[in-house]
Length: 114
Length: 287
Image (cartoon, rainbow over all chains, first blue to last red; front, top):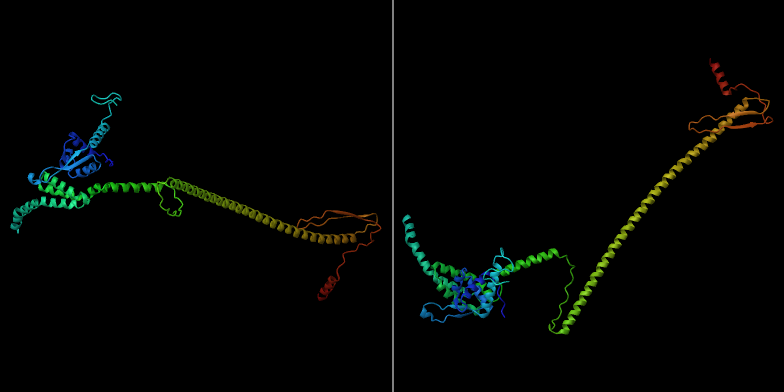
């Protein structure tokens, strides 16, 4: 099993974009734009996630001459990637949620009891 | 000259700018292809095509495409390290700084260890052989015990050396004290000897004076005896020695002379010495 990448804020954003539709395929520039990351910083994240087997990529099945542009590389979450992404997002949500004004043992509406 | 400047600003500069912007996508493509050569060889083709597709999909002005190509060109070495599984330059630099800080803190906190010669390199052994592993552990324990025993011996030797030095200091101090006492004793002896010598000189003088005064007393007594004539009874004489300059006193002595032993003498006037008479005659003759 490949080593898991360090879950940075940028990787969480990428997970969030990809988990909106786990079955969808996105190319790198599109993911970067949707995640709001600076141009160019998406490539090392995609490299790390692909090395950790949380993402798979494949070439776009089009004819470059027919569409008049180069074919794109499309990324998709694997099953393990989707699970890791959901866990990471849940942990981040729990860690970043405000703790003031809350009584232990009394969850807010829609929140799972802890 | 002004017209030339105006012509350059109005015609030539816009032409150059438009030409440069037209060249920007081509320059960006060249930069991306050049950046791909800085990746590992097995990933070059894939990432070159992907970056070119993203450049083509980039919505923006042509100058921004050039900036994006330049950015990819500059960041390609770092991404190549990511593809190789190596930490990025910043992570490596951060790790080196942390290691340097940790080493410097350890050197500050750790006491200096005695430098020992490096142990000889052991031959490579099969790491998974349990007997060899047990033997290696046993040997390492023996080495550790021997080193600790040697360290303990060195520590004891050092303590013994310190104690010996302290005893030597104490012996030196005691010898100094004895020498000082001897010096004081010798000085005291000198003082006593000088005082004794002074006393002996004084007593010798006193005895001489005593003898001298005794002679005078005898002479005086003789003159007194010759000057008195008491035919009846014993003659009692009290002789008192004259006072001395050095406050030497002779106790009064009393003695008695029996009458039979007393010599009958006649009291005569003071006899003038012959030389006085001679001198008187000479003086009278000269007159």
